[in-house]
Length: 431
Image 1: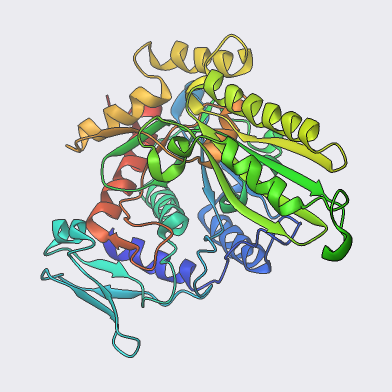
Image 2: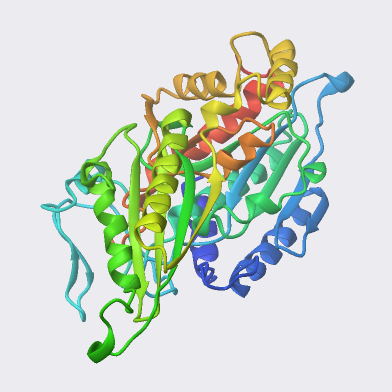
């Protein structure tokens, strides 16, 4: 299995598919469309049906169930994203495979003198003796999320070749996760009609996620009044100073660098200004929905104060919700999600929710789980708000969004075994 995963992973990362937040279209880059086409061909070879690539490069497909006597089991799906992140590095990935890592620092790029130092990344030494895929130091590796694509495609290949019993299995490969879950928001759920789903989009071996941030963005646009310094008194309205006044009104203790765990934040991540106008870009995050809404209200109140204080400026606020906490989907406000879950529980038993199935799969494989509240989001954060509960589990990779990203192949194998075990548990062939 290890070599099959590696072969697929190297083939997928060879397709440049970095998303572009400035493109204004979905998909934001043609490489994602190319990768979707490649995967569609592979799915067809495996016997998937209803294979469709939408105008947004959302690829959906079905592997029809093969259970005897039309045994009723929940319909499950997997969702993986096609894009890699723009971390200010090269969009092209040049992976290296270190066979039997012996410990110590790793030279990623001799010519550029780029290293992964154990003093900065001690986690690498957990994998002495394992085969590890690393970068050449000039890019991210792309294990986020192409290790997940390799995972599910390898698992599907095994299921088909071994003729393993399974229910209906859907897959959705989506673009532009890294720039706001844009691809997940373009899924046609009539082509992904599952009772629940999974993403494989977190890190270290054993990680399980069913809590993510509630996430939003705010943009403040400030139009000032320009004037020459010789005649500016009482005339000039400086948009840059108004922007900095806003920043000073925010709590410096509630920024990403000052928070951890389930603590939320307001992050002013850019101010772009000139003498006539300024734009302030803000990210809003919190696991707690009430606190998330309070952060939005705080920003709105600050903007109203700035309007009073600067009556001759034109100040506009735009706030957008990006995705929600997966855990919040199981509420009376989202009956669709609850109904899907009830149907699954009626078939599987009360102790077999999508999350409990994850723990059961890990337990069957002897994997110690580490449940984390993710300080971020996955495609499942949006999909869950649409009535399809979608917990998340580990790829086995480390240091996503970094040139020191690496993928231990032993952990990647364990992740793929979780996928296979979930299929078996849902089919009732394992307990």
